[in-house]
Image 1 (cartoon, helix red, strand yellow):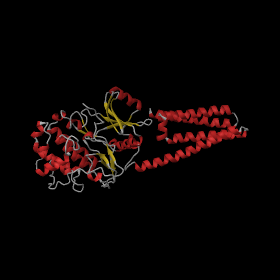
Image 2 (cartoon, one colour):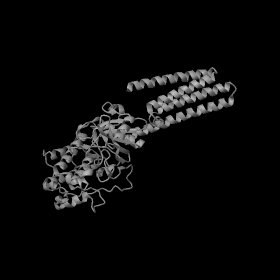
Image 3 (cartoon, rainbow, N blue to C red):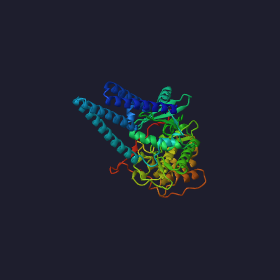
Image 4 (tube, rainbow, N blue to C red):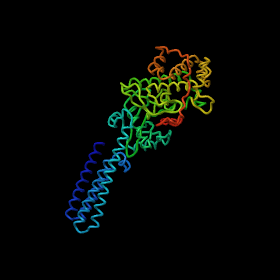
Length: 463
């Protein structure tokens, strides 16, 4: 189907060129009526070819500027030639107007070309490390048409969530497979997130990472298609008064271990390594067996093997950001380890790190209870099974505190996995002064890219 589409497109372009050239010849030989009809027909065919390929004029402007540029140049030349003919046929006013219009169109085309090239250069400079083209990952993903995805979303008829990037809707493919369709609406930010997702999750596969099934880049539209997670996101289970009672200790531990395994794969087994930068309960999805799937790689960065740290703008979600990230210092994969530590505490304690409902932040409470050696006071008491495993729960909280240390002492997630597996012990901690939230309200901080406070999951719906 794709090959036939390009064959048809090429044929239309060739026929349009033939009519355009024939029209110019007719005008030069003073068969003006036939010439203009032929030239107009050529332009119509070119327009059809552009719309067939791009589906909208807006997409031509932002994604296929060469098509618009070529059309403008041809149009300018036609007006110029017609003006020249009119001047020599003593119709000087019409000729001069036509020539001036042709010159204006070509000047606009030149200015448009310069503007597009500048924006393209700026976008490439700001696009982040490790950007690749669609062709590099398209072979492993399914390319959906916009019509197919609209039909899939119509079958389900349910929006799963909305954020600054756009929305996510439940979809049902023709074969009955449920999917989550992310629609990126903001072009600049949306394209950055679109490419970040493709460059990361689009080319890797792991049992604890959400699977990207396919994508759509038709017209100005950018859509990503993921596997559907029926149990929704973690926040709906640990922060909900009723649901939290169903999460026994084994399920909570399973979730923590699954997150650690997913992060270990990103940090050590991917080449280049990947920093997620937005680990939080809203981005931890759960399947029917409560197996973890890390999602939302819109802020992710790639790190080459010879790089240990990167300098980046502030990004992530308030309450989960590593101190070195907030302070604008060089960051490493350990930024994700910090966020992971916060999520562990939220899973064990059943409350948010930052919440207006509590007088103190969770991390402040952990510091106080750690100093008193009474961490068990913070264990979620809504589930009896979790209380019965108090000793294991407290040990897990110590692992979380271990992950919250300053960057130079914070462990890599590979070491955390070994501790969780019982293959090694963690170092004892005696000073808890690092357990405090860094103020992000410093007005001197520039180029922040902080996401909104946690909202409902956007890859899975409420249950």
